[in-house]
Length: 428
RNA sequence: GGAGGGGUCGCAUAGUGGCUGAGUGCACCCGCCUGCUAAGCGGGUAAGGGGGGUGACCUCCUUCGAGGGUUCGAAUCCCUCCCCCUCCGCCA
Image (cartoon, rainbow, N blue to C red):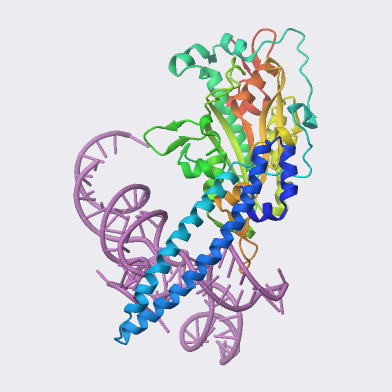
């Protein structure tokens, strides 16, 4: 959520920045409404607070009179009126605040100045590239062809058990999935200084709203019908909410968490996309990195976080590149985002395998995460960041496709071999 | 799922309609005292929002699990929900 004070004081700047994101004119116009409502809010507030101050004084007077054994009937009947008025104004105030919040919750974050302006993914800026395209010397196959042939990916049984976009992983395929999870967690905890957490993968509405998945993106989420519980689409949701309503000790920042969780997405509206293979599943595994930082450190921390995620692909020897998302491609809550794209030929080339974002204070304001610079200082909002470190399934697909051999076997990257019981190849 | 108990200022507690935004103890901070430490003494110690001086200040409102209700007035009475504890049942 944007800061109403910031919007009020920088209305035109906010509007033009949002325009570069492709926010529709109607939503931008709603900002005027918010500013109007805020004005109204403050004027009602002044009135109702004055009434309350009077009432409180009169109440004290009544209590004094009663104590002295005197009658206070006149005062009491007079207070009845102003009390009704207070009730009415409080109600109005609540309505105004709710309307403001309704609008603001639908307004995305303002992009950072360093974000390239653009409308399409084509306008994203490539920052760097690692490795090079494998020189196969034969016609490479897709990961699903290889996976089925090796009997490590069973799509038919995935469908039988759950439906489209589910897969059954078997044997060394299942083990490879697990190996990747452990490899990534170990790397981030021991080399990069993140604290490992294992959060609930079902969360309540309040938590889901905190990070911005609700109310706007309910159709992308799985909801439990009889309970106030949703399946998380990413570990970002529970992990960022760990510190909801907390006031953190500034000396402890930045806080860095890493979490492995399964993720669940309905993928509504992507019916035609990535139908084959394991690229787009309703359930997938992901190792997620989350940071809470001081405002002035968040952009350095974004660079570090992106580097941490990239390290995974480097150690696995996977060809990939890093791009800066342009304003039009930016996610709802992000102020700046780097995507790390792995080379997956069956997906037409580079495919997002990690997305690292700085949300600045946008999420922190929603979930009220603050810190104190020192003991006496006033609380300030932290900045939150997160990024995949990295998506397990897509990495597995990249490994299969980049390490495939002409005979249909797949080599295991050296860094992963200790996690695979020492084997260096999956073959029939 | 059944029965009972409980959620108050960092922690522990007091408080059943009126100077209670809230007492006491602990913890913490600042002074004083003591050769040092401990003890002792004095003072202080929440957040959010509004208005004003726009300098670290002043002032007002709100907040005692959450939301509603009764009342001139609610931590205190009533209703709903959430959470925690004990016992029983069931289970990983």
